[in-house]
Length: 278
Image 1: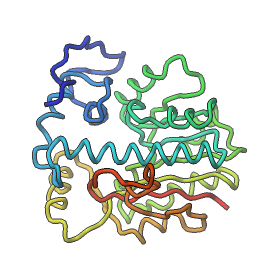
Image 2: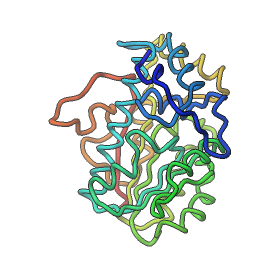
Image 3: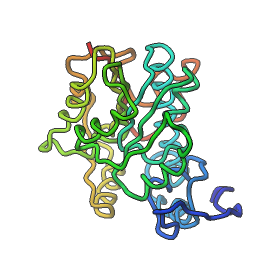
């Protein structure tokens, strides 16, 4: 159990948030070391991942995986804002904008960046809106990433789609079955913005030999009702068809431009990459 789980806290939930019911986004925030979580979330975070595969496994293994994904997101967003001149971002199925969030990573590289977060879980949206209250350049929308046109219509109140946009689809597209056409989501988003816009994504990697991970994902599917579709590198690269993929290409999260060229701990296999619209 981490120190955060035993530390006394003042549990005050925003309107629309039930602190007594554990929430996946808040559990992830807790495991990342954040404070936007409650006792119910910490209890689940400390006990629910005993069978998480990898080395280390369990809750500590989950923390390694979450930090690897967030660190890669921070590096990519920082690159887009600092080196590519992107000044506005749309982060879909974002979870809570707490530890390692998009707007802070962007503004470290370029102050004044505007960010719209989107999540389709009402309690996450309510909590996100409370966290971002008072920041006119960062808003949180209650919306489903599977309906990009609705999101674009509402995000246009904050973002200028005549200028380049950075779309963030981290940990999103592996929840869309092949039959539902996951490629249409980034295609629809990119069709609405000019050349120079960018798409960044991460996606569970496929490894048919990883029996432990397969069993864990199957069990998670049963518990959540979601279906995780892991894809090969070439399958993930197709999401960038017609775009210019930035070096080092589609790679594992810990290998996307690691600090000082030294990858951190090896998480469960997940691809990530970023590309620019021509």
